[in-house]
Image (tube, rainbow, N blue to C red; front, top):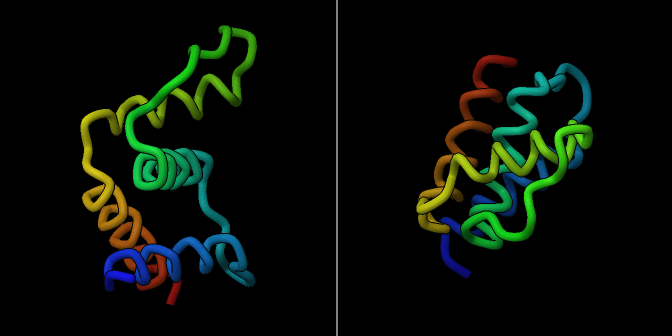
Amino acid sequence: MSDLKQKFEESVNYVQNAEGNFKPSNELKLQMYALFKQASEGDVSGKKPGRMDFINRAKYEAWEKCKGQSSDDAMQNYIDSIETLKSENG
């Protein structure tokens, strides 16, 4: 496993098991979701959810903004975002 992939998986694990002061905003949650999906699945796929499906539409649109970004770039951006968050929360 590459160092990047290992660091990415550690960051994902941190987010999934975070305790204490880790309370990300909805905006950050969408950003992390989009970067995770881009890193693991590539460009957005499937039909865009309807206007009344607010949550899934927001997720789709966040992922859509990452279109064209390589898997490695998405992983690195995810890692960088988590590292910044960790340093801000001490």
